Length: 191
Image 1 (cartoon, rainbow, N blue to C red):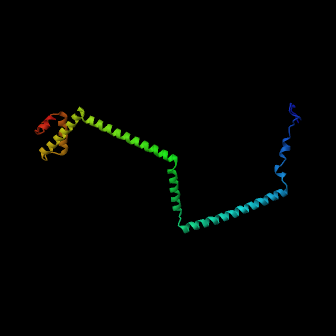
Image 2 (cartoon, rainbow, N blue to C red):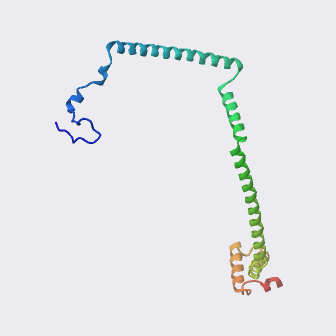
Image 3 (spheres, one colour):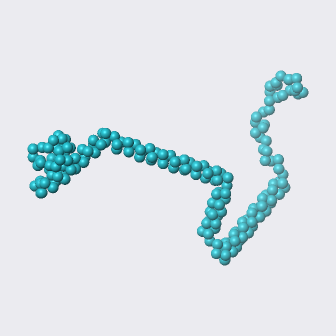
């Protein structure tokens, strides 16, 4: 065996212990047979008490269920009652109140923003409708519709609707009456 160099605080030299010697020591053998018997007896008693308590608990739960049945308390009614109590508790909590106030404020602000947006869009549509290019487009559409009405009325079944429509579109595109169109009203000529 090797000895380590003795330090200033070490009163005795330290020697290495044989590993085989340590593994031969069984720590469970420190208990006597009498102590072991006592512990086993205590364990058995404890298991019997646990079994008895389980039986008593089962009996109490059965009696509890019978009393509820006599009162007409069903699992569904208990669930509703518990849910309502939880809902009430949640609504009266500070966090719920703060969240509710925050959401209410956010809803009001969102509503105001949508109102402002709607007003702005309406204004833009009004401005667009009053613009010269929209008025020009509107006049062309009115002219085309007027031409179609005139042609359908004047042909009296002499052509299909598609022919009249294509003729009116062709005339509108050229902005002059075509040779195959009958003379029309003054409104048609201004288109």
